[in-house]
Image 1 (cartoon, rainbow, N blue to C red):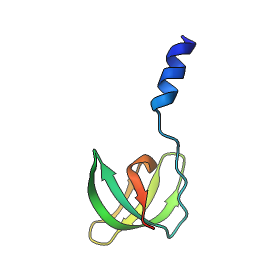
Image 2 (cartoon, helix red, strand yellow; image 1 turned 45 degrees about the vertical axis):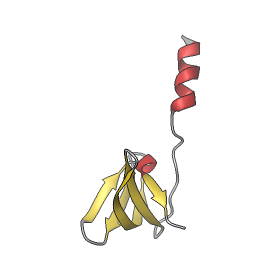
Image 3 (cartoon, helix red, strand yellow; image 1 turned 30 degrees about the vertical axis):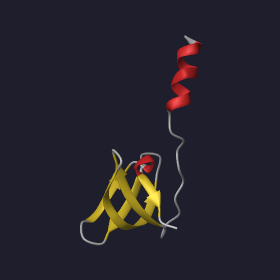
Image 4 (tube, one colour; image 1 turned 120 degrees about the vertical axis):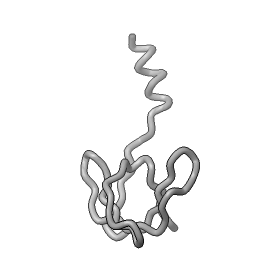
Length: 68
């Protein structure tokens, strides 16, 4: 059983921390769905992002990429 948990841990993504005001893009299944979002807040459940044209949404942190 421990071998299965170890193999699963190799494929799990680490939780990423974003700071409020940081610019992000939403990437799902290898394509950019939304761009130029601003992080408003982050909780244990996900990240609240304000998008320029689509209002705000609550998304998983593993689906966001920071704009550098």
